[in-house]
Image 1: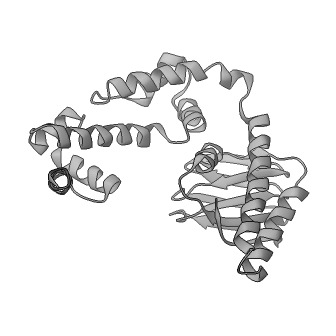
Image 2: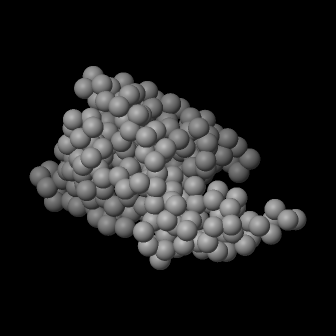
Length: 265
């Protein structure tokens, strides 16, 4: 279940208001947007209507505000451990969607914050778990109800085929322009649909595919690291080292050394 960090409800910010997080945060942010506003997430701009929700994923650069009139929202910072709920949250993240009646969401956030500050130590977390369950069940239902337009649904099978083809040919160069051309849509719309359907950008998905294959190859072959890099689609060994360490936290050489040691043990 998620863990609450801090939050607020019916927070009012006088015009002109701008929240700027160019480096994002290490936690999720849930916003229930009462006033409407202008938002930018990962380079995409949205004009958000009152009665909308937005879950901002960790590490996402975002900006929002309201140039004319007060900006009002309910908000909650939280973390979540890996689970089926975490997968749902990732699917919903970084795209605003309508929630209609906001009072249920306000109630859940208000009660979660009360439990966080004043709840009995023996029962507070259990109560928050129930409230989070109620909150995200309703958010997911609202997201599903307005999630996929008929036009977007028409591209889902094509996106699945593209992703499978990329996974089967991960070492080859892939351009957004070429892949979007297969579906007959623009590059920006392809990126939007890909992230919406799979919960991750195409760029990061491809990196993950290549690093997973690199880990397997390091463990099961005697190829030199330079050869592993080339096999996994990297023309530069230095770039491979940097990307491998960014994803796994250690270098390829250390991964092979430590994993080999563990296998021997």
